[in-house]
Length: 152
Image (spheres, rainbow, N blue to C red):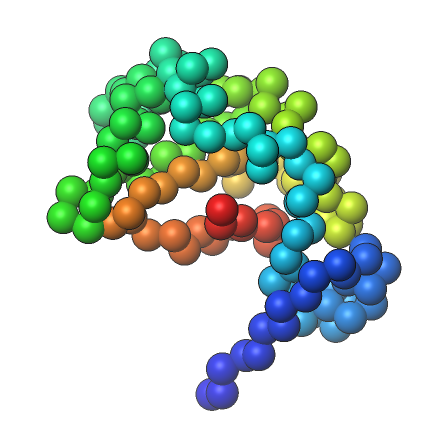
């Protein structure tokens, strides 16, 4: 089996995306699709630590403060990887982050499988998640709703 060619595009309009990739079921990496998001300017570990560092999250049966997770991520290396995935349910854990993720969903994300009421959160887990990982962790993220995975 030959590897699949994945195009890398920038400036792709929603109509071009639908015609060239969505309808023929072709994968594409879209550079700059979220470039208008304020999150790209302000969402740093220090920003999250300052505003949400005391939030408690559980991973593998252990409860951590979000600030502690961020400290561990920044010190992470292949020999001592931080817990991964550090998964935040935006709807429950930090809903005010949406102000930094506008437009949400991105116009290319149609049909919208994230907010569609037919996609049951109870069956697939939370709908809107932020994954955070550090050196030594694995980046590959698979979703059950065929939505976007972004690496910063």
